[in-house]
Image (cartoon, rainbow, N blue to C red; front, side, top):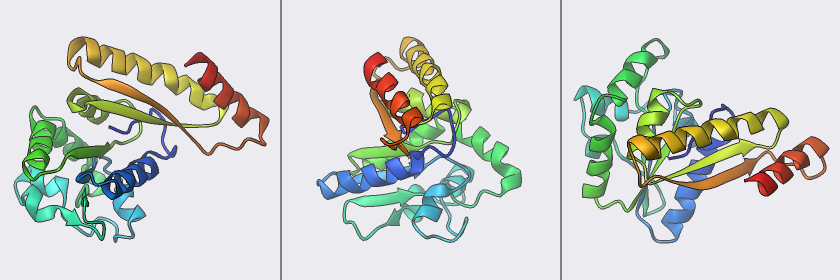
Length: 199
């Protein structure tokens, strides 16, 4: 699960590039987009909300197999958010966080032969992120190399600790990925050094 308390820090970019690297290393990988904004699809050059996806699976209008998008990489597939209107985001999030919804998506991916599922979560530590972490084996958190971003480190650590203690003892924090890091900018370097020395 790729998570961050802040938006615009590179979650989708990290998920997409990690998925591509894993696929090229021979791992059958699927990227699942839980962010209703649909940034994953846009990053791949797809028209905004042009394709059916998770939203249609949750309503029963389609199946995972029916909406799974193959890519030019043999081992990489995409399960995009689908057609989520900006006015119905709350309904999508409610459906996604219903008991068993995420578990069902993950079980279907395993049944289809995928070894790794990467979940691209929305910004923040709300219901969608919490449910994703309750079902994940690992969490990776992009962190923008700017001073205010350090506040989010404690928040994500606290959430991971709580979920490990109450819902998912198998969850492991892989670490933080510095994004937008510029060695020539003192504030950026300070954030990197703080992360390296304190965590």
